[in-house]
Image (cartoon, rainbow, N blue to C red; front, side, top):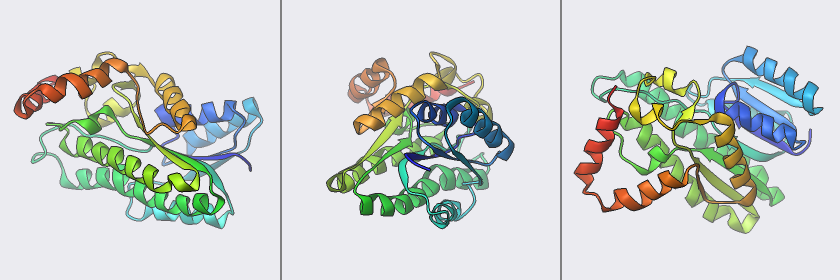
Length: 258
């Protein structure tokens, strides 16, 4: 395999589109997700259409230590990862004290711990070769507190901060790290998170293809942060910064009520 991209959460949505975009560009791919049947279907499609090689690894990254297990599997197969796209993640809706604690901890393991474990492991090879690009899927939610999605918003804030800090550290090795920060996206995310009718997510939603293209191009350019919509960037970095914090909290909560 050559010009290899490792993509998590590749069975649907943004991850699936990132895999397709990398395939169009002639790169081989390691696709990772829980649903092996979906991954196998994607593998058949990409290999037939784009004449590339695709390796399927079926793994639930929300399980303790799964990120490290994935890195070990990659190393065992002797693969040199040129592009790492940490895309796997999920959210959940409801007041924190009511939501199931185990589900919140599972979200933290997937959205944060797996990202950290995989990034740490894959960076070892990138640093030795003095090249590599990383794309971490965060969210515009990472710039805000999120009443009714407290853990999800906080987990994406971690990804945004983590990505930028690591980028600065690995810059001398010729490696870049990009945080992809989409607004609402038309994927399975809303249904999984229980937010199908959520006003914050149901309006102005972009396609997964649109978001993946912006993220992929930003990664190639080595951009630190890629917010998918200029209007959202203005809203977050401009308007909200002048609002009292309590007013911001009330606004986010109001927008999220079903």
